[in-house]
Amino acid sequence: MTKLSVNINKIATLRNSRGGNNPDVVKSAIDVQRFGADGVTVHPRPDERHIRYTDTRNIKNVITTEFNIEGNCREQKFIDLVLETKPDQVTLVPDALGQLTSDHGWNTIEYKDYLLETIAIFKNAGIRVSIFVDPVIEMVEGAALTGTDRIELYTEGYATLFAAGKKQESIAPYILAAQKARELGLGINAGHDLDLQNLQFFKQNIPWLDEVSIGHALICDALYLGLENTIQLYKRQLQ
Image (cartoon, rainbow, N blue to C red; front, side, top):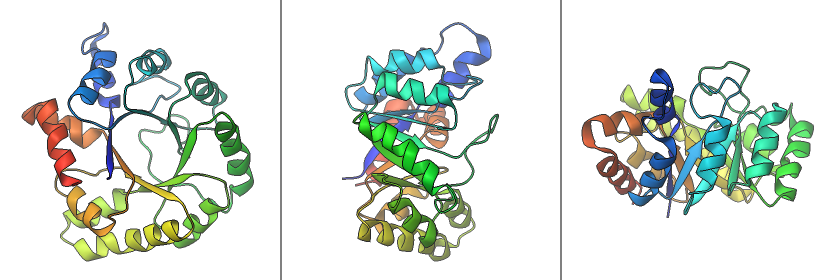
């Protein structure tokens, strides 16, 4: 079964736009689990423009499913937060400081030694590790040498081509990357721009997919469809 982890960053963005605590991010974490999500994802950034470090600590206390913290492991503050809260999974992304959103995977060849060292820190603490990777065979092969448990396929390229009507072209490199990852014993997650239009096709072509992490599109859909209904609609795309 492919799990759905709901990224609640956008709920925090809405709260931060007015100050106060409306919407309540911790309550949102409780609710997305109650509505059927298999996990909750947060991505704290140094400027705390959406999820705050205190949010992450508070959310940890209410998690009954799986907790995934993603972020830039070049920030010592991020490493310290993950080791303190001990989520089920940490997802490492190669963001630059101040980056609007994640837009590429790791160069697992160039940063092999760094990733080996950093991944070991989290695994020694009993935390499953996933790293953001583009659908490139060499990058998947490089990931297998870092000690990571999983890769997260960065799916913006898939979503863009899918929206342009190029379905087979959109999925082809992801199938090859996922096959290579399975061959090398890596678990496979996916995320970025997955939505109700393209999720089912992705899952159908990579049925051994472990998890998808979806935030922006799901929260946008929830404005029209309601959060509980939206989560159930996304879950159905994964069946």
